[in-house]
Image (tube, rainbow, N blue to C red; front, side):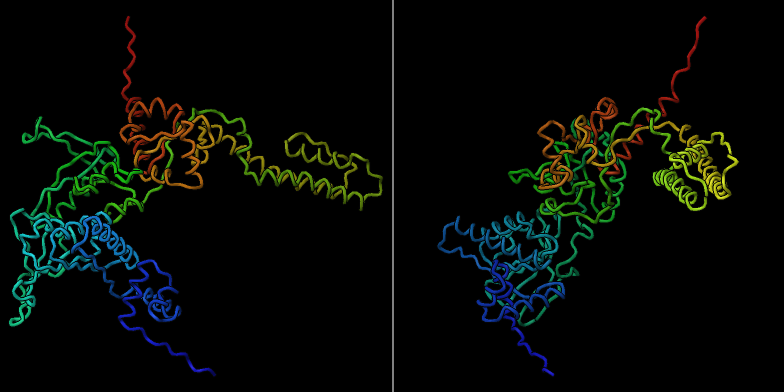
Length: 536
């Protein structure tokens, strides 16, 4: 029996190098060569670290700013932020510690980090510096909106420091909250009830007024409210299901809000030049604080904004005009299932053959050549309920077979007659479009999708499949992208969709509400038709 193999444990210095080299893009073999270990050791360590959910270690980056060109420093800093972002994506959550006494460096680092989505809420941001609070006033807004803390060291004695937390939406003249401090003689001094890296957004102490981006949607509609404090005496607001959700959030987090509509009236997508449109673009550029959706969650949008917990999950449906009630020419086949029709035809072929075999074996007379077809004709007469003449020369087994077939056909005909009567009582309305493929195969139909939405984003990014065919059909004029307010207008619904010229693709919620509104209008119009009065 072989003894168990023993493996040498890695030390912390080796693990740090593992993470740093792997983040830089080196392969496992290259990492092993650089650290003086084997490829198996490196692989085993990454696997074991992945089993606990994260790779525990430290990655150190350094950016030189002394006697160096500003462009070179910015390029080096951009590379460091990119590597830190890659490390964050690999680990899930990280703590970023920045040590510097250069205010310009902090400005450049925070701008690049926010743009690269490094300073998201899951990232803890710790700033260590000897600068004063006044020297960091340009950094306080970033610190207030991120999961960060500020550690200020004393110029006279670097062993003494204070830890500050900047609360979100604080007044311009307010100072950060001093959480704790350290003094070599007095030790740790607790200065506030605020915890380290607190949940700053659990309740906003300042009670700010936030700006919320919103656009017309079936779940909430735009309304005009009287407000003498704004130009014109009226301000635009919204009411509906999503606004109710926003009211509950505002009440719980202690803030008020005002609405801002996006100039292009879209939810937002990323253009080829990297710019963002719609409400997503407003949040990304920090023109507003919140975007009131509901928004479709996608990878591109997640790289620009943070999402709340999903409210609901819905499929994409097609909204097309219904056909006129009519009679289907093939309706006589519908009372019975296709398998029943196949079984009937099979029996009509096999049963005469069975009777032919019995006659050949049991009968002493010579069979006529048309015996098979005569027996099939008899069975067809029974199925069609025609008059049947029983021949005296029939054998007993022939009578038994025909009798059993009569019982079967009686059940079939009664069932067929009842189902056919039910089908004829209901007018048939054709619905030819059940999938996107059905619409795509109809060259006479134009497809409408929401502009700058998750659906349009998926169509533009598709490299294969049905969505790619949809994108290619745009060159033939068969695809149109409109805002929701455009394709839900009465003109488009009445003259374009109901006529069968265009089909709208959107979420299940939108299509359901549009159908309900159209049904309500139709029923109301029917009930309020003026009565006819015949004048003498």
